[in-house]
Length: 374
Image 1 (cartoon, rainbow, N blue to C red):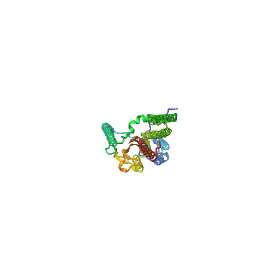
Image 2 (spheres, rainbow, N blue to C red):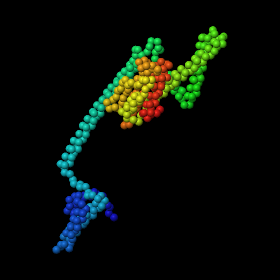
Image 3 (cartoon, rainbow, N blue to C red):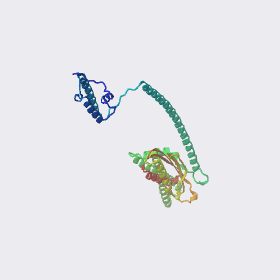
Image 4 (cartoon, rainbow, N blue to C red):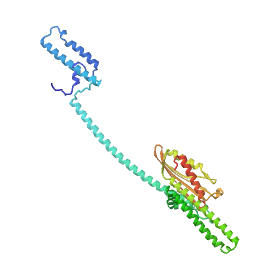
């Protein structure tokens, strides 16, 4: 059995055998085949010779082969075969020149892109440097404002003790209350600290009463007065101590909640809700006052600082306690914002409880409005 011919088929020549242009339809192939078959049929010849009969038979076989190959291609691809007309030397040289020109143009474009990438990298580095300088200046400005708030003239009387900046002891406070909030043994540490504080308060009260009432302790009335004063001192000490502890724990939790965390809101909506929370919070006849606000032109990040000055039970003109609120946020996605805030309290020790209430209420409102309970 002869081997199969795997040489590529020249479909253009097959079309020419059927007297067709390359790319003709299947119907044209059948029509021209029938027409040529009628012409080459021996019955159509008047005086056929042996040579003419051989020529006609050979031509008929060639036409039949062309029709079969073309119909086979159409049955598989349902489309005409691609013309494989050979290019002339001039056309090949022209295409080669065009290809070389395109390659050179591609290299020029690549070089321009590399230059643009290098320029973009330099620009980004410069922007980052400017942002770093801006953050540094903003931090210095905030520190200066805090110092001005803590030491404004006329805000404290000469006889009053100076306000205590709670942030100065934040490191020790965070360490202690992190232990107290430990879910495994925090309750035991809290109970132990409470019992120890009560014992210390009782010992101090007993010592003070002993010094004051030693001369009259031998009289009945002296002993009664000593007992009353001792337990009054114990009660007052317990109230002050536990009030101070509650305020410190509240400030610690507010600082922990204000660490940078994601909020499922766009940057502008986050800013709007923070501002609304500040507007709706009021204590002791005082409200939050936004003293500074900075935002990027595209609203992707912002920073604000608000202050509340108050004095429980005092008139508006004698507000001496200061609570500062600082908030920073930057957009991290289409509807995602990274938010961070912190508080700073400048108040005497006995006013820490009202200041802690201000901090606690604002933190709860922020968590509720921003949908990020912590």
